[in-house]
Structure formats: structure tokens, C-alpha cells
Image (cartoon, rainbow, N blue to C red; front, side, top):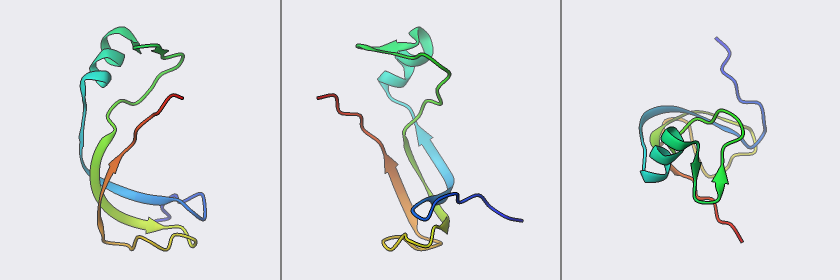
Length: 77
């Protein structure tokens, strides 16, 4: 089976768990949080962990089988 990895710098993860926080709950209930309003459907949950399944050829810092933690922050300047 071919697994997607559409970019030379992408990593495919098998997610183990994902957490949600207060801002995720506001998006779910009100479709907004602070000044940001959702204009299209959005997958909530941004604090996740899992195992690297596949790496693009230019990925040098991760290897297949490694455990990773993913946290994404948005900073408005």
C-alpha cells in the first residue's frame, strides 16, 4: 500500500493521541476564539503525539519509528 507523503519535507505520522485545549472548545461551540473566526470547517486538536511512519527525502532530523510530539502555535504580530 502506498502511503501519502506529498512533499520532500513532509512527515507522515501515526497518531497515538491528541489533546484539546480551551481555544479548541471555543472553536467547537462558537466557531471563534478571540479575534479569529472560522470561515470554513476546521479540525480541532493541536497537541498530539505519535510515531513517524514515513519521511520525505529531504527530512534529515527525524527517522521512521521515532516517537514525536506535535504542538502548533499561532502567533499574531
